[in-house]
Image 1 (spheres, helix red, strand yellow):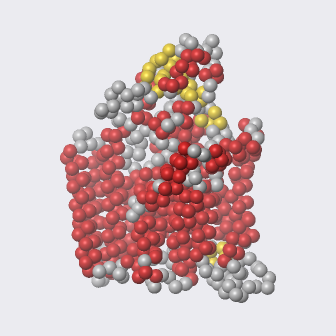
Image 2 (cartoon, rainbow, N blue to C red):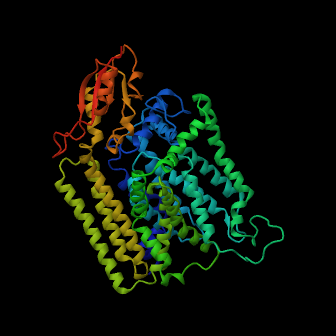
Image 3 (cartoon, rainbow, N blue to C red):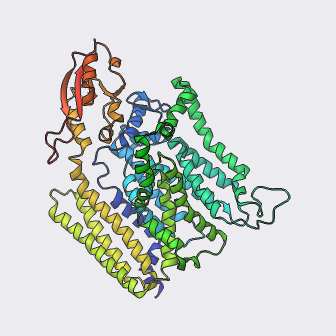
Length: 590
């Protein structure tokens, strides 16, 4: 096959710079951007958007606030990013767009980071394939479109790993100064974003690498134990003086923010530590007996691994099975930096799984950074292990599967265009572009020779997932948004709250069940209310509270009257007559 023909096969296309800088962003746009601003904020987005919006209104960028009350559960970096997006791109307001764009951008930047990661060890087509795997993982398609911290934190943390690895010297068994310094800057950002979680992910990956790295010349102990010497224990890698410098670089910005925070709020260090200890689950461990521990055992220790694996399917199965299956063992890298990279990506996800599984309050999304090494390992296995071991029968199956997937995308897109009423121009553009790209990907696979067909099938699968997700979000989410509980609550609040009156809301409104948690974002500058005695005297106000809190409000303010009972289920089929979720009351304390 001549050079021109090779460029028109999947391996040839993956090596193309045009694919990296044009086609990957195109698939990213189709998968992640449709309907990005259609749905109202949900899950934890309100707790990220509200502090950012209040930063813009108050001008205080040191103390995050939630409904006017100090909110210190998380450090402020993500709030700064969301507020900055709102200031420069949202017309001075924090919107669903401004709070979600950082997460969406982090997916594209993460894909490009994987294209850069492992240069000099992995072929370009393997690195680009890893980027496609990464973008098509369920955890990225879900959290990468939400205004939450996890996607941005994962990007920053893996960037720290990538920089550290870039400056790792295999022959000398050490990381040079620039590796520690660069990792320190990025880890400092991660700590300012979500406390020690990012650092825990970084050290999990590094520790897994060190555990799998066999000691060199174990019997040749040096007379003077110099750190990072070629004959030293593998653990000396972590005892470099530059490691201390990395920690200082990471902690100094956090320390400066904490010092300023304590000075402005008058809090003590012990008060701040109490807040953060609750966030880490220390109080749950100390007092989690009875039903609490039963819930932990069932929901966490039994289900955690399954949920974590589902987040990165199918590529975690491809990578892990390919890494340890007997026929692949003889094909592992023999030595040098390639062998060390293999150790790192093989150990990363299991180490993250163990660490966050042990932690009772750990969630699978906390190990979201594991999507990066899983993508690299899966691409490596596909390109270097399974390609050679594929039979003619499997190749025929892959060709047939590719045809079926292409037909499925075309049929879904065509059916959506014909059957969906009132399609917008953006929806039609997404559907048509997805169908055209699916046909293009299938055409490339048909032109790919047998020795590259496994890679072609894997790339096709990733692209079909991206295109299918994009079509679903472009068509289904706008229709679903009309009946979202959050949307209904907001529309009813706007219709029933008299203009110009101050709005107060109880903290149980935010800390109740998941249903109430999704109604957390209240536009218009509502203020927190821990106790009804805090209501201002002789001032007409609106109070948004839960039905079970109504009697307490009446005891504190006998003249309070109900303006409306908001029912987030009232427009859903089969849910008529459901009890009100939220009460809007007008009150004036004497």
